[in-house]
Length: 459
Ligand SMILES: Nc1ncnc2c1ncn2[C@@H]1O[C@H](COP(=O)(O)OP(=O)(O)OP(=O)(O)O)[C@@H](O)[C@H]1O
Ligand SMILES: [Mg+2]
Image (cartoon, rainbow, N blue to C red):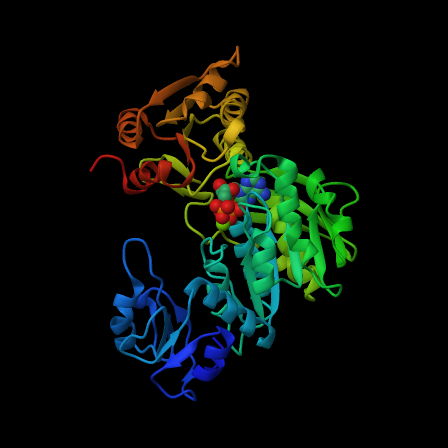
């Protein structure tokens, strides 16, 4: 965090300093996990359902926290507040305009974390960048990330997520972007939102929050995203494969590692790009990263040099690895919705060629009325693309298998297993050298399978 006195912080969070010198300066980051506190930092105690953060204040102080924000005084200088979550938001709101950093924001139903990581690698070429790995996109993760920036930070790359209309607006009030990208409008959390139009309304809040000096980067290939153009006062840049996209990919090909190559076309000219990351769906994500880099001054030649070097850095997203036994694994198990699962199944098909392919797929949560059709459509796609084995893992995953079996001329086979252990046992007995295995489902629902494949199935 930028250096602030306890008096500044107390004022920013509308709290009261109890004990300690108001002129004491906090120079380190703000942490709510006492194990992560570093000397000069600030510890924020949340009441928590299972553990009370206040009990960890002594440990935080031992690690060098100079003060604590909490609901009640602890045995250290404490800024007492009514609501620690509101306090961390207020502190981020106070800090953001005092940074010498450009905030780049990303939203969309799928690919926020991936694209945030890609953008971060691009802008890191231009200056110190904060964009922690993982999915820190809500009312806690967002301000926490903003507060990681300090005097040296030039770029903050943040993902903005929504489960309700108004969520992104709230995050933007804490700290909004100058450059914002909307990737896609899918069906994740549609159970909560009610309709895709509501999802579009929620995502559009990111570009609505831009200043008129800002830039909105919109996916030209997604009609609901493209339609957001009139909703921002900022300049609009279209990216995608559509002929009218300002920054576009032409002549896309995909190799047997699922890596796309294309011609990057910009108003300044074009250059060939061969990506190192797997999945054809990365093309759109990389175009967004290229558009951000271009806006911040990178030349076409620099982009041509940087884009092939981009890597996926957050865990369980299109993580492709070869096992010693000759089996190739695509660990895309972090989370799933029908769009991202379809993208992963396409990558599996691109990568398997003549090799035997396995799609080990778990339940996709929060789809509401779209639940059964959503699962069936992915199963159907897998069969249409010629996936050899579809393993539907656990409760609610059955319609994936049903969808595949509805494809009349499918030569493959669907298997339903009750849980992840059963999937692991099945694979243990059945995988052969040369097989390609995709693992994917909502959150933890296929993580054990992915970990077992990583470690070698049988001990
Ligand atoms: N443009 C895209 N279209 C479809 N799927 C994508 C796209 N980009 C990434 N994915 C896939 O979506 C899944 C989730 O990726 P990622 O974690 O980047 O998304 P997210 O939007 O941050 O998700 P969350 O809402 O869980 O934070 C991964 O399986 C990833 O490979
Ligand atoms: Mg995320």
